[in-house]
Length: 228
Image (cartoon, rainbow, N blue to C red):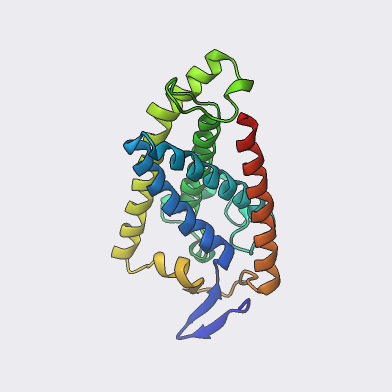
């Protein structure tokens, strides 16, 4: 799984390990569910909070996996300097930039992670003053709760939706250029024009990812119980 194999001048590489792929699609489903439950309101808010805590656990997992995960899932693999990003946008990209996240794609990834973390954090201290309050509201001042509630309900969600639309737009853009970004996120492999190391994606690494997520989920569950 970790070695590149030549085929018609292209090399098949395991770019996205299974934990990264599961994270990606689970996060996508959760975002859709959060939009639906948030707009429905009422009793659906119970599930809105549960799904929000799931996103919290997923984000914590991704932060850890960005340090110890597969080669192309690590943050070190797609942290680019402003100069590299500008050169890429001007057409001066290197072949290896197309393996994992491109310089422009990395900006989108980090922006989405940051905005999602802000949305989760604001949700934890939000209060609609009706029947729904985050588990950490009792630890925050009234001014902080009001600010978090306003951001969560009126600002953050729109920024997330805008970034999601941009993400989908980028996928469609690359599809028109005969580059399918969806398939590698389904089966993990990608055909590239340069020989590069693949991501580790064996039973041991997958079990390690499961343990890490379990710890992250337990922490999110502990946070949820602080409301009582």
